[in-house]
Length: 190
Image 1 (cartoon, rainbow, N blue to C red):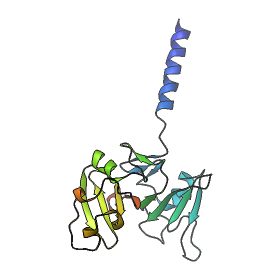
Image 2 (image 1 turned 90 degrees about the horizontal axis):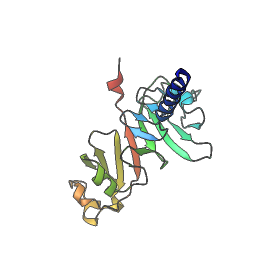
Image 3 (image 1 turned 60 degrees about the vertical axis):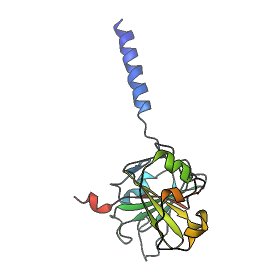
Image 4 (image 1 turned 120 degrees about the vertical axis):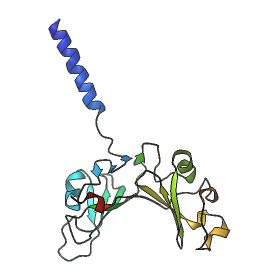
């Protein structure tokens, strides 16, 4: 009887441990898969040990993870572009992430291939900024922000930099030009 109870408890613990594995593609507050907002550029090679890391830095004698880096999976698909707070400091925090791969999703299902309809259905919009060629949509209570090309907007909004763009003016079918995550490195200072 004791052996049976022990085996049942052991199997239950194993199932719980398997269930708690972190989704390597889940975007949540302060984390993108295994990457957290506390990570520093010098840790990128260990966080993405099974992926390819391509440094984009033009700094002479730069360390591999100094400056911006692109992350590719084993099949050669571009996953992420990581940008540090300080390009010349490998100890710098990662402050911006551009997400390319659709496997990366928020807990509400938002991914780089989503549309503005997905945003309106699942998120509250904090603000919309009008820029020269695009609008940037910031989501309330989220690290995610989205850039939508002005080509996706009605013509009367495309050429007016002073126009205040409202969510109701962005078509549901509008696609994302850039799917970004922004982390404020100043909030991490010890």
